[in-house]
Image (cartoon, rainbow, N blue to C red; front, side, top):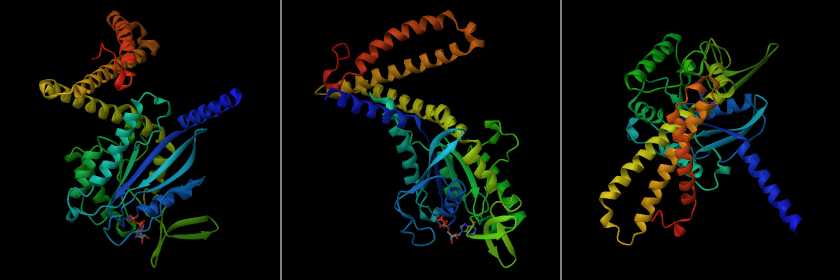
Length: 376
Ligand code: GDP
C-alpha cells in the first residue's frame, strides 16, 4: 500500500517536473479580418510540421471586418537547439477599422493582460513549482496594404501593447502592391511608429545586425507549383507567380526565421526580464498606492477583515521587494568580474534581508484564517 502510494507520488512529481521543464513559446497573431492571418499561420505550421492540434475550428467568419468570438490556438511541439518547446500560435478574432469603435481591440488587450496577471498570481502562489507560462512572447500585427500608414486603430493598439509584448508589424497581401508602393508604406509605418512612441521588434537589440528591420511584407500562399527545382508555394496570377519564399517578392523568409529559429529565446527572455518585470513593478506600485489610500481610509474597515487583507498585501509587497533585492545582489555576486565590487553595505543588506525575508516568508505562507498575531 505504502509503495503504491509512493509510486503515485513519484509519477505526479515527474509529471510536474516535465510540465515545468518544457518551455512555452506563445505567439499572438492580431489584425483586421481578411488580411490573411489564418493563411500565414497555416503556412508557418506547414514549414515546421512536427505535431499539431487545433483547439477550436475557424468557423464563424461572416465577411470583411466580422469579428469571430473565439481565438484559434494551434499548438505544436517544436525542436529547438536540442531542447523541446511548445509553440502556441494564437489567432485572435479580427478587428476592424476605426469605424468599428476605437476600443475594438480591447478584447485582445484583455487577453494579453489576463495571461500576464494569471502568470503573476501563479508565480506568487504557495505552490509556484508548476507555473505554466501562458504569457504572450511575441505579437505579429497585421497591417493593411491599402492604408497609407498606421491607422488610428493600429496606433492605439500598438502603443498600448508594445509595453507588454514584442511586436512585429507585417504588411499583409503584398502581392497586391507594386515595389514602390510597398517601400513607401514601410517608410511611413516606421515614421508613424517613431512619432507615436511605438517600440517594435528591433533586430539590433538582439544582436542581429544582418537582419532587416520590420515591417515585413508577407504573402499568404494558396497554390503549390511543382517543378524540377522543387515545390513553390504562392499565388498564381495571369501575369506570374507571387512566391512566398522568394526574397524578391516578400519578406516571409525573414519573418519565419525570426519567429521560429533565431529569436525564440530572445523573445522569451525579453518578455520575462524586461516586459514582465516592468509590468510587475507597476502593478506592485499601484498596490502600494492603494494600500496608502487604504491606510487613510482605515477607519471605514468595520469588521477588521479588510485590515487583515491589507496588512497581508503589504507584507507580500515587502517580501517581493526583498526577494528582488536579493536576486539582484546574487546576480552581481555570481559575476566573477564584479565580485570584488560588491560593497560591504550590500553584504550587510543580504544578511539583514535574509533574516527578515525568512520571517516574512513564514508569515506569508500562513493561510488567511491563521495569520500570526505579529501580522495582525
Ligand atoms: P484572416 O481573416 O485574416 O484569417 O484571413 P484569411 O487567411 O482567412 O484570408 C482571407 C482571404 O485572403 C482568403 O481568400 C485568402 O486566400 C486571401 N489571402 C490570404 N493571404 C493573401 C495574400 O497574401 N494575398 C492575397 N492577394 N490574398 C490573400
